[in-house]
Length: 310
Image (cartoon, rainbow, N blue to C red; front, side, top):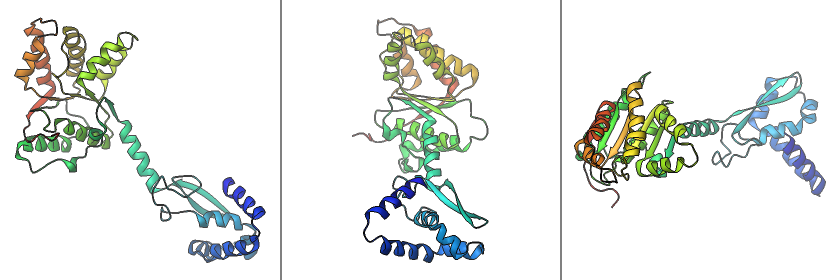
């Protein structure tokens, strides 16, 4: 209310044609259907009462009630952006309460959903992925589309303990499926964490210096849904494989918390990648432990199709 009162006072002071403009404003207020309805429903709103509160009536009349005067939520014309006035009468006094408009409610819901998706170096376009933009016509992606849709449809009160492991050639759209899953899960109020594996390794190495590694690992262990993008593409080290990745997967397997993966490798190929660290060590048993945990944590899906990055 205060901003309108102040602006009107300045307007009255500065404008030479105040009387003419005031009369025009009064006509517009009194001819408004909402104002006429208020006056007719409340006999206590006499002509004198309305005249006394004309500025209040103007405040109500000039604002958008159901977004009809606003081009968008950001372009809201109301005093409180995203809030619409509701008028009510007590005795002969006009009062107003402000409530969230439909666009504000939608805006807050979108922000809430976005906050449920934490990501580590995942492109914005992936975070905005939607299920209706999946390619349902490509037969090489048929299994991936079908199992993804089924997975989402099968979620009720409790998350399945297994996620999905998408593998296939570079550029066929595996990461996009993770974005779809994250967004659909957020609509069900399920939060997820998406991690691009090569950056994840660098993040963990850097966190040793600021002593934040343990807290980060705990977050990855306990997030409701974990998504590891491009596993096998990271620079291999026995330390990361055993102390970080192995620890996270073991915890989630024991706690029955789902993990989703994408990779250019099937599990057999991934095992060979994990067997050789960047120091040239061959550790088959430890690599097998990782791939066995992945089997326990996810359902394998093979993907093909054209390169969508080309």
